[in-house]
Length: 165
Image (tube, rainbow, N blue to C red; front, side, top):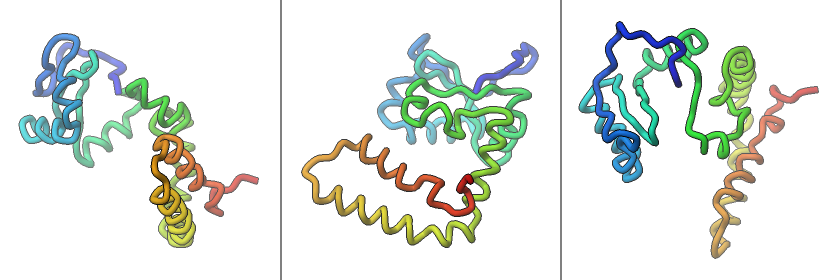
C-alpha cells in the first residue's frame, strides 16, 4: 500500500532500506519468511524496508492490519508487486479498493460462515483427493496450470449461498 498523503512531520519507522535501488532484494530472495521474521524481531511490529526499488512499510498484528483496512481509502492506496496481478488477477479481493472491495468482502463473508463451510468440507475433500491422486500418478506436472485448475474446482458457484440467479 502507498500512502495518499505524504507528511514530512511524521518520522519513518525503524528499519533498513539496504542499498540504493536494489534495497534488500538478495536477503529477501534467499528466504522471504526468515527475512520478515528477522526484521520483525529487530524492529518490532512496524518497520521499513526496500525491495525491487520500492520502499515499503510493514505492519504486523491485528491492530495494525485493522487500522490499514479501516482507513484504506483515507490514508492508503492498495499496491502490489506486478506479478501478483498476473498470478491472482485484477479482480481478486487483494487488488480491489473502495466499494468494490467492500461488496466482495460481504460476498466472501457469506461463503465463509462456519455452517456453510461445514456443508462444503466433503466437496473440498473429494476434489482435493482427486487432484492429489492425479498428481501422484504423474511423472511431472505443470504446477501453475494444475493449481489453477484446482482453484477453479473450488469456485464459489459450488457454495449454495453464493450462487447468483
